[in-house]
Length: 81
Length: 249
Length: 122
Image 1 (cartoon, each protein chain N blue to C red):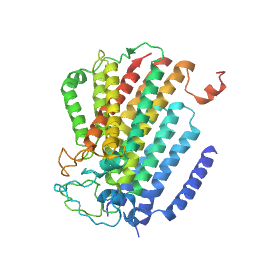
Image 2: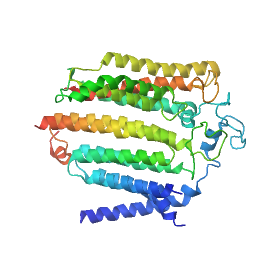
Image 3: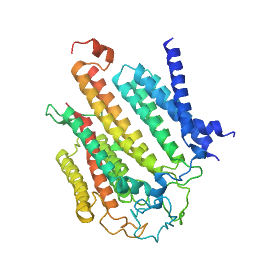
């Protein structure tokens, strides 16, 4: 049984990444840590035998959401200059 | 002091939720499929008289005319058994895309945001990569009933191709009218397939095409058609969101 | 028995604590973008928990292939996976709408800080 050990390790990594995302001072870093947490979540979905959900999470949850956040940050910062 | 209170609250909530949920759930090693709805979905015995009983052998490559004949059971659940749910989901996505468009273009001016000068490697290689990305997206949503993937994943991959075009050059702008027409036609096609099922078999979104052999590309009746329509609709909507976010107000 | 606490952590307490981290962020952050990030993290926790309900030990992914020729009763439960697939797509739609609202609020009032927005005469 390799599965509980490996998935618990990845869950711990997601926990650390989300904690860093919440506690980060700069919004840019918070966005990157959130994206990291999403990618690790996709890895856990593969371990738990849900490949469709893992594809959705990696493409939509980690990729597209990060684009949305970065564009929003870009537009907000462009105004403040 | 605030951090300590937050930590105590965190641990307390974790204790109450965890110990409360731990009793009634069959997690991990204790989990079995016996008696759950998922078992009937996997055996394809939902419409029979006793869904839990019949130990029918489902054989890949030779099985014909069982209900929702898709090799990927998740696709059979998403666009077969619970297709009405997916119709609602697509509606939510459409409403969100409409809301984003209404917020950004209330003023009516439509120019695109000029990025910094694009990288040379990016702008040259986008010409090679673009057809491959679109082909891969189309592959993902046409084979949704056989392999992992489907309309939502493939649609997002095609939207990523549109994003690549935006990143690669400052001249590109997505054709807003074409996207809207594509989105409207595919959404209406989904509803029309549902109404055809209502007309021909008596149930909304029911399967009315021959099921074929499990594992073939042309199998599973109406499921691949619906997933291709969902893929086109999602790609048009997400490309619309991309072009809204890249637009300048 | 040695694996009991590991399996409890990965199937129940880990996803719950990720959800609670998101809740903590939602309650303490004042920046609208960071609140949207916290909502996304709460999403991750709930999705992990729902998928963990469908995991069966030594299961296969619920797809019939050549390797899985005959029916075996060790597939993972496809129903929670279908629900999570729906939830992820809806969460990205909601995030796009929240961020569009945030950008509009910033261009109108010049700030994304909730306390400053509360002090303003709107």
